[in-house]
Length: 404
Image (tube, rainbow, N blue to C red; front, side, top):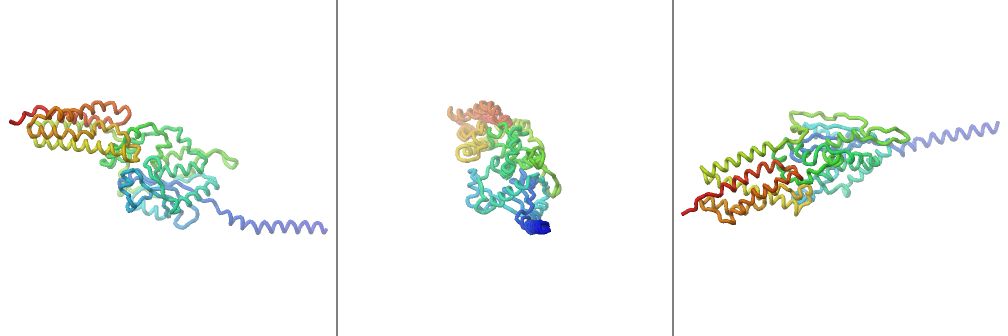
């Protein structure tokens, strides 16, 4: 009887101990946060044309959760515009509540989509802890790069790290478009921005890329995550990284920016038409309105030389690697300004000297050699614009009678 009572007392004590320690264990191990990828539609301002994304940590905090945004920059930052020109931009990770974030994008009419991620509790805690650490003022800043270290690639890398390299599979899949193709497609609704970006991109923007590299575009990362599978574990079989999707803010067409097309625009036909029309205008002005011809020719040389010097500057003095060694310098020739004396002489009715003619003829000659450039760089449309324009200007400077 004594043994039975002793055993009963031991059992009761053990159960009481478990009852007392269970709440303490529960308190020491809070529920794992839920992690989601938020993707925001493009906006109307030029720096919003590529869209945006962020990570959402739902951990019971006020405001629906914490949004971690790697795309924060400040125009008031010291030397901001100099850093922008030389490619030394500093961005930082900023945080906000989900409620305020949704209010901001809803006010602009930009859709917000959520992909809830299927992370194990330990992975979710690890990612939440990393984001909290990275958002501290001493850790938040990072060196920004449009293609390598942008808001979307920062999220891609963080998710790849916490899932033990599950996103590495994207490196084995070819990109749908080149870097230039994505840039032109997304900037297409803003024609001046699109043409400017196309002008300064070099051959590196036309190399074959992988889905991993193409994920600098937020909507590409959004789509790519749907095809990422997490490896099987003891607790779960192979499963998709994206557990569920929903729209948090619907697009408002009345306020939202124009939707980008699925493919980049085809520019060759339009550029050829512009080149032929410009050439015809030059030749007609030469015959009937010499002052207008001189004005048009001067504008052509000014633009070609200025654009060429910008390309040289990007290659020699900046960190904008996607614009290095721009083969369009064959058409936007920095030597164009050396042809001004020939234009000036012809405009005054005098025949240009041999050296003056040489620099004028050099423009179509180099442009003709540049016909090989589209083998390495997608700039055929620039050839179709500038070869006829340079040829027409060079031809029209000869034959003016010398002034007596």
